[in-house]
Length: 88
Image (cartoon, rainbow, N blue to C red; front, side, top):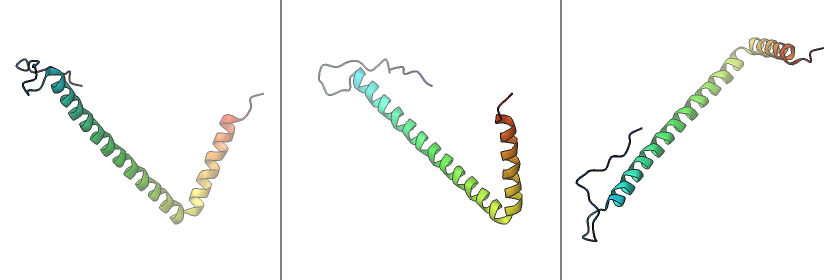
């Protein structure tokens, strides 16, 4: 993360139409907020696309190999049962 360092040539004004230091900081903040928002949206899309592809591949594997998928599910269920059973 970059720390904001204002341009030393920018000074607060008394209404002559130039940006004040606060206006400059607000503009910089808005620019960086928009960039972060865009980056988060791109990441969300990539994660959603990856999850959809993975789901589609899993469904296709089950359609192509139903017996193997059933055996795998039974094996996982058995192992989870052993792991979570009550200890006497």
